[in-house]
Length: 205
Image (cartoon, rainbow, N blue to C red; front, side):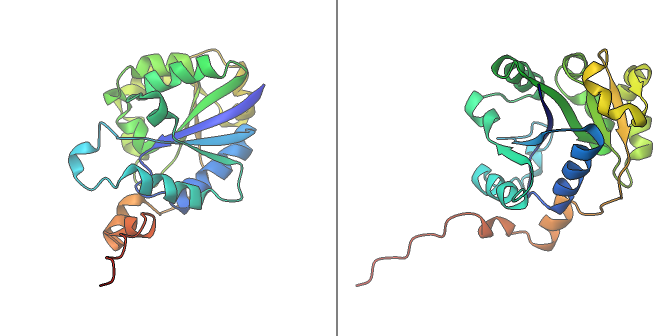
């Protein structure tokens, strides 16, 4: 069966950090592919007011994922799912011959208890948490981690994730990558202009 790592997110914008952790996870978990699920909208981020249009975020992901075993997917938009728990349920029905593991940064683990149906997510698929600088203490102290602590598997067994009894979580450490979408937006607030089609020129007189 094909082994797929799923990295969901806003990709607002996608950047080299997403690519680096995906390639590292491919190796550490023995994956065939990583799927980037570009979210039509993130319920935990929609109040920020700086979410770029889906087309720009998707295009940035396609560019960053080039020449790597990374598939950029708009399946959440096609399925009309808003929450990860619903997306995973549909993915598992659509692709019964694929085995999925959910990839998330430690910043996501810190707020995982705020996700709809987070315990159900953990019972549906294994979870690999990738350390991110500045978030490890919050992640380890998170309410979700209190519930998941007994489910932690040793990193040296990471390639055996298809055999784990769920819930199961593995903590992975790679070379720290300081890049973040927040920093990129701060450096170039109009970044999306590079990915959206230019406005048509007015007709000449």
